[in-house]
Picture 1 (tube, one colour):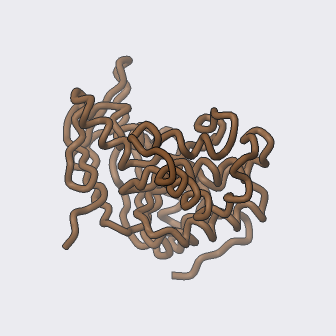
Picture 2 (cartoon, one colour):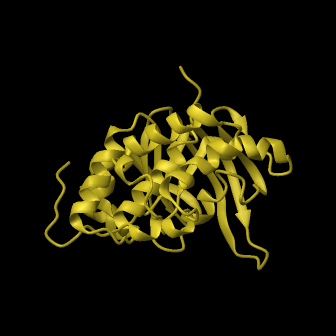
Amino acid sequence: MSTPSLEISGLAFAYPDGNQALFGVNLTVKKGERVALLGPNGAGKTTLVMHLNGIHAAQRGTVAIAGEKIDASDKESLKKIRSRVGIVFQDPDDQLFMPTVREDIAFGPYNMGFRGSELDAIVDEALSQVGMLDFADRAPHHLSFGQRRRVAVAGVLAMKPEILVLDEPSSNLDPASRRELATILKSLDITIFMVTHDLPYALELCERAVVLSGGLIAEDSPTRALLADGQKLAKYRLELPAGFTVSA
């Protein structure tokens, strides 16, 4: 069996004010798996994601990416881990800051030492994967919100990460952009860990869902089975859109 893309063991974390956000999270995501992280606001989802590339350091327990444990005190280790964990934030404007789309996508690979035709090929491939190659010379702020989110995904893909972490990928998208992004994400041959409140999106994109509640993994099951269980949804304050039903 291949090494898991993500392995979390006994992860606990408290903020300086004493708020205990994680109490001992255990989670394994296999290579190529697509997993949705669900849970109400305040469950600790963002805190958990911030451990995946060392923004938060584990106070107890471990986080490993492709078998390599994250050591927040080792700058070289962190640099390597951050190239293997591609986080796409909820607001693409948090990630797009260069004058053109091409320069934004090239930023990460350039800092990894790629130059010339090799760098151009990496950029073109990443933009092609999200259907944005024709927009390479445009300014990001001239793009629609949905297009900017696709460029943000391309910027992460250009780094050839082990795992793609998506924070509310469908938020603020119109129906067409939402569908286009889903088509792109389904086409990618990569491990996906998706934080979302959009339960239909979780069902469409992820075969497995885990629920974080009270700083612990409270449920871990096939997404369809979880969303078909009304009692569990109510227990964890998860709601399907009106009129949307799921059969087991």
